[in-house]
Image 1 (cartoon, rainbow, N blue to C red):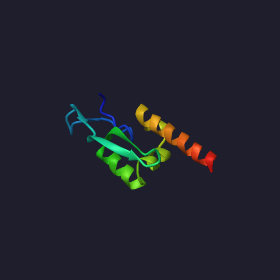
Image 2: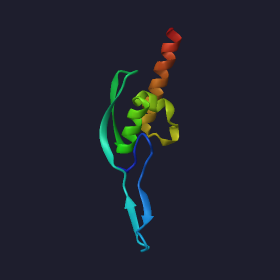
Image 3: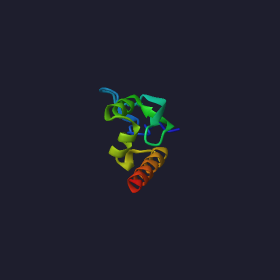
Image 4: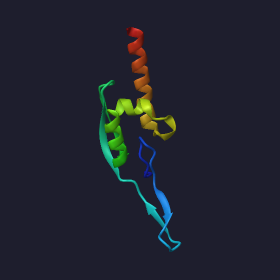
Length: 96
């Protein structure tokens, strides 16, 4: 399993160690979390960095985050949820 945040795309960072030319790796602080989609009334499990989780909460939840962020940063499961949200929004606007 790769060390990449499923919502922000944040991954590992490789840098040189101080003045030595030895490589060092910084890994993101990934957490397994269950986020609730209010529009779909379902919960989804994601592997999210702590920074990404704070960002999702700041924007106002999973639904708002998926509407805001571009597709290139999202994982395949997050893209599925985003497509489901779009379908639900389209069905709601057609019903109204």
